[in-house]
Structure formats: structure tokens, C-alpha cells
Amino acid sequence: MARIHTQALVARTKTVPAFAVKTFVTRAPKGTEAPYVVWHPAQGTNTQERFTGPRATKHPRFTGHIVGETADQVQLLADLLETALFPGGRGVLTVSGESVKNFWFESPLPVQVSTDPLPEVIYLVVECGWTADSL
Image (cartoon, rainbow, N blue to C red; front, side, top):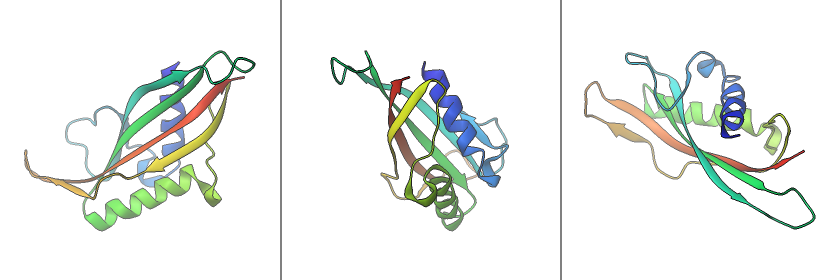
């Protein structure tokens, strides 16, 4: 079921105009020009939260790389993405057949610059995830 989580996050990410056609999973095509975002999905942890509820609760998580031309652009794009995922301070991701709760979004590292190989790439690492119960 992890694929539906990836599809839902990619669809929501594409609502940011800069990422509408530049949202990728795991790898961006060679030669892609900034700005763009790459999501790296992980299965996360599946748990049984309670005996009377759903048999399994999923906790998908994703690491993203927001790539831009400057540190300022990367920060702006991160703000736009967070706003798309949390309009008005409330997570709005929907996954077909699941109840999405406790959505979170964080940036655990400062803006990074990779100079090997050249040309250099300026990017920000973001992470997000949520709790999902089957309906």
C-alpha cells in the first residue's frame, strides 16, 4: 500500500506551481534544471494501535530534496510546499481508502550545497509523514 501514499504526496506537491511538472520520486532525470523536488519514500512503521480499531496503523514517511538555484529560492520553495501541505496550519493530505491523521513536516538540516559533481546543487532536506488507518 505504500505506493498510494507516494501518489498522494506527489499529487499534493504538484499543486505548488514550481513543482507542477518537476516532482519526482527517488531520482530526477539527468539534466533537470532547478527548481524541482525529489521524494524518497520509505515504508515507515506499521503498528497495531488498539485491539478495537483497525488491524494495522501505517506510519509512512518521506524524505524530500528541494533543489533550487539559490538558498533563498530553496527556502521560498520549502515555505510554498509546507503551505500546500498545511494550508491554514492544518494537514490536508488525502489517501484513498484511509484516514490520514497526525501529518508532520520538518526540515532537519540547514540548506546544503553539493559541489561534486559540478555544477553545484543547492538543496534543502525535508521530511514528512503521517498516521493512516484503513477506512
